[in-house]
Image (cartoon, rainbow, N blue to C red):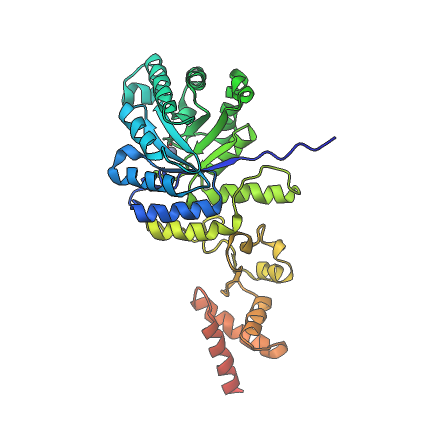
Amino acid sequence: MEASPAPSVKIFDTTLRDGEQSPGASLDLREKLEIARQLEKLGVDVIEAGFPITSDGDFEAVRAIADELTGPVVCGLARCVEADIDRAGEAVRGARGGARIHVFCATSKIHREHKLRKGTAEIVALSRRSIERARGFVDDVEFSPEDASRTEPEVLVEICAAAIEAGATTLNLPDTVGYAVPAEYGRIFAMLRAQLPQIDRDGVVLSCHCHDDLGLAIANTLAAIENGARQAEVTVNGIGERAGNAALEELVMALAVRADAAGGGGVNTGIRRREIYKSSRMVSTLTGLSVQRNKAVVGENAFAHESGIHQDGMLKNPETYEIMDPRSIGVPESKLVLGKHSGRAALADRLRDLGIEASGEVLQAVYDRFKTLADRKKEVHDEDLEAIVDDLHASA
Ligand code: KIV
Ligand code: ZN
């Protein structure tokens, strides 16, 4: 019997829309184009390039990206407002790699009663009309019931059924405020597939969109994928509203590391992993949002080792303490940082790199001085080691 192919998940990148909604992260047209070109190199399936109704600048940026890129589908966001949909339709009309309009409407009780001040029937009717209008521009329409994870299941089923009937080809279920926990978020996807068999029968793509308010965005995204989501919405470096969105690099590597371990099984993406680090640096530089040192996958410390036990393991076999090869994501190499927790093995290795062979008593003498210095400094640098060695020679 032939093995069935490993499932794959589409990567929908919203760095240029939800990511840009991070306070202080606004990008101009030139910057958006530069990031979009890099996202194309990275191999994302869909780029949500902006929210065209918000400003002429955003409209022009979405249009320029749609007109230039040939790989990914380019998407514009729209509320269930005619002017929004028409503007988004106009912006993506010429998309060379495919055009999508993403229509959203809030559905949870709190949003219905306090933000929209509309009842469920009105919201369903409005969403239906808006999706139909979007279909007048493009065949590829995504619908999001905003705050889906806090929406009553029966309301979610009703609006999703209406959205499919109206022509939505992707149904995205956002955890808008990062409130869900993984088992619960996964169950929403399973419940919808069970209640609406047309999702699987007609190839409607279920999508997940997770915010990180409780630090669960990636866990929730994985739970959704396990329950049938075939599109994941992410941003580079996890930037986005408040605590941000699920981070592209974390999701891709979580799937890749486990798929590699399963010998190609697991869930695949079309991402070119070697472009990850470059994409991260570019987004950080252009948005001005720095990446925390201990950030998974792309943080400065992600492949740095300070303790002696870890450094000794790394020198013997990097797989003892690294589950991914840094070069596979475009980071040149791992770092053995010399500090007060480091041991002789890493010290001798660094001395060798500096062209200094030291063993036995000499190594012990350098080591003793190194430890004294490391108690005073957070990190001991190459110049410090050279000074220690020179000093020992002078006093010999
Ligand atoms: O978080 C959210 O609900 C959104 C929607 C517009 C999809 O970003
Ligand atoms: Zn969002």
